[in-house]
Length: 177
Image (tube, rainbow, N blue to C red; front, side):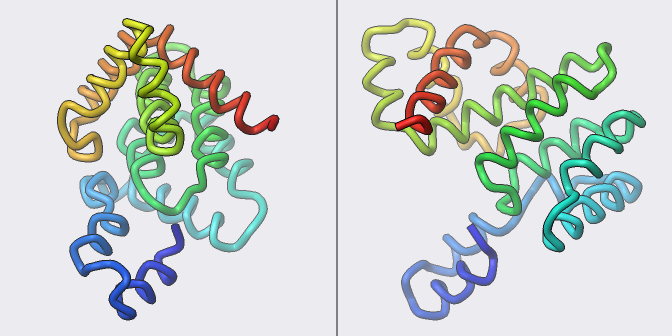
């Protein structure tokens, strides 16, 4: 959600200051090293300017300049829409050096988290009959996902591949409707 819209909602009393901070503060961005922060800021500034941010992200990815920290900051923040987060995940899988499999797992976990936020009721319904999806839901919700470490996110992405594919099918079905 747009930071300015959230600020207006806070000022109007629709959301509390705590809710505003929860939705706008990005703990992953705060943890970036200076060189990572420069790349992150460049990507977010390009995003705010309009077109071209994905090409810039791909360019950084091909150069090996996208780190797990930058991916976490992008996927854990509010600057990107769900579709943009999916584009980041797809780009990480196709453009990042093959040895960086952890980045793929990380994006899978963030994708699963975003999908769960969006399709919670449907995924909870499926989890009642599907052990793999049930395990994924437990992994995503056993503590505040956004406060988990990148290593925890990687483990969720790595060990829940089948379940993540299943819930991605839900998203694809929902979009086609």
